[in-house]
Picture 1: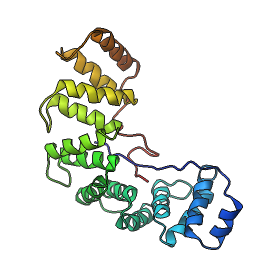
Picture 2: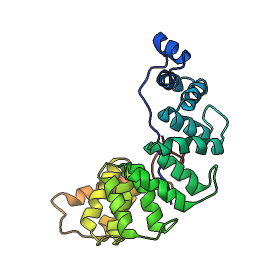
Picture 3: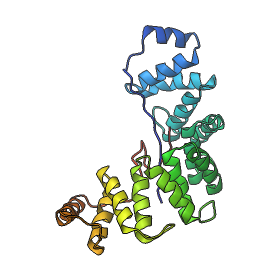
Picture 4: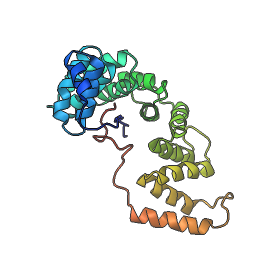
Length: 258
């Protein structure tokens, strides 16, 4: 099972403006956060102090990013317990990234005891805010029955919600569920559509699953040129062998989210 992590980046230049520096130095939390964002791409270690100063003033985005850096040891020694503390503050204020990441920390026992039930709670709160990664994470717990009662039907509903937002991991998992009839009626045609969408986004597992599906099913929905398309998918699958289950690219595989 693999959990999705979220990480939000902001397009910035590496040099803060003089005005931003002045306001940050005078204690403006938004300016401190902007300072940190400007510095992060060039010198992440230097950005940490500004995230920390803004976070201590209650800046939610700064709290979430500071937690992420602490959890992963980026620009600062890793400190999962302190990361959880900052995630909890931001999550309590409704920050969707912090909620999802706090769920991850509880699921994996990072900085807190392992508690899939608490993980499911935080994932659900973020999922209800339309967070596609959290929807996937909650669906995986539901499929496994970890921390929650096993509910394949609800899991598929969350996967579909994330897949419709363009989340490749959700599209892949939804395709597998539809292929196997898990949580929904077996539907090879729709399964192929979702697997193809995930494959087009670069999901190598989806390439393999799609090639396998088209080898084992002769669909009535196949139109002209399907043989050539099938051969192309098979060729791509052979050129890109599966390299382990990776649900979603993230700053650290199965890490947290910002």
